[in-house]
Image (cartoon, rainbow, N blue to C red):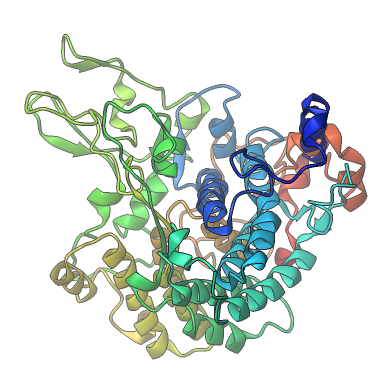
Length: 546
C-alpha cells in the first residue's frame, strides 16, 4: 500500500520541472494543496461509499445473502465457500487507503484555513467510519502510521485499539459540527453529497456509529448496554435522518459507471439470491411467526428478482440452496437467445440481479426485474434508523423487557419498509398480521435478528452480527437449530476444508490483502504470526473471542 504511493510520489517529483519547485501554488493547476474543502468532500464521500459498500457485497457472500454462479477459482464463488483470500477482499482495502483515507487530512487542512468546522467534522466521521468498519472485518490494519510519509511499511494496529481511536474521533466530530463556522467558510451544503449540508444528520450518524460499535462488545465483560441505548437515542429516528446515498442513473445508452449504484456494479450478472435469504423473507424458518392472518412480506418482490416465461408471466427466482450440493458445480451462468426466445440452460431459474433489458419495450421478454438494491440509479442505505431500532430491540429482549423490545422490533421493520417507499397502509397491514410477532412473550432474539438481517441487506454490519451472535451454532460452535440465532444458516456444501477443517469453524475475518503480503509482510507477521495460515480467516476478531 504505502510502497505504491511512495513510488507514484517519487515519479511525479522526478518528472516535474525544476522551475516550479520554489514558487507559489498555481491555482489553475491541480496539486495536493489547491482544492478547497467543498471541492474535496464530494469525492471523499463517493470513494468512501465504494469502500464501504464493496465491503458489504463481499460480506453478503459470506453471510449467505448472495450466491454466485460457478466459476472455478472465481473471486465471488470462493467467498461463497467462505474463502476470503489475498485477492478477493483487497479492493475495499485499496479503495479505502489509496482513494479515501489519504485524502482526509488534506481536507481537514483546507477546512482549517477558513474555519470550516463542519467540513472537519464530516471528514472525521468518514475517517472513523472507514477505519471502524474495516478494522472489524480485517481484524488488524495500519492506523497510526498509515499516512506517515516517512514510513514505507506501516505497523499494523489491532482492531480493539482502532475502535478506541474512532470512538474518540466521533466525539471530536460531534464537537466540530456543533461549532459556528468562520465568516468565509463555505456552507456544508456546497460539498455534502450525502446529507445535503445537514449538521444534524451528520451528528446523528456519529451517534449511530457509536451505538453500532459499542454494541459489538455485547459478549465481552463490562459491556455497557445503557451506553448503547443512549447513543442510539441520539442517532437517526426517522427515514429522513438516515444516511442514504442516492446514486445516479444516467440512462441505458451511457456506459460510464462513475455514478451507478455500487450494488448494481458489484453484483453484476453473476450474483444470485440464496434460499436462506428467500426463507427469511417468506418466514420459512424455525420459530418464524405464523398464524391465521398471515400476509406476505411486501418487500419480497423488491428484494428478489423475477423473470418472465415465454408467455410473459413473471416467476420469482429460485434461491440457491447453499447446503444442497448444487454449489459444487453450479449454478451455471446463462444467456438469452432472442431469436428463439429461450435461455441457454435450466439454471436460468436462478435469476440475475440486474434489470434486463434495462429499458424494455412492450415486446421484450423480461429476463430480470432486478431488485431495489441493484438498480443502476439505486440508493445505498449506509446507516439507517432501522438499524438503531433493531439494536434497541436486541438489548431490550436480552434485558427481558419484551414489551419494549416488541415495539422496537416492529419499529425496525416499519423503518426499513419506509426506506423502500412501501405505502403506509401496506406497512400497517403487514405489521398487524400474524406474519409479525404480536405478543411480547412470543418474541425471540432470532425474530429480531432475522428481521435485521433483511433490513441490512448488503451491509457489512450483517456479518458483524452473524459473527457476534455465533451464526446458528451453540457455544461449542456446532450447528444447533435449538439454540442458534440465525435459523437455517449452515456451512455451505462446498466449504473449503483447508480453511475450515472442523465443523465448528466459521468465517470470522477477511484475509490480509495482497498489497500487505507483497510489500509489508514483516509488519503483518509482527502483528499476528498466524496471518499466513489458511485457518487465519476462521480466527475470531477481538470482540468475538471467548
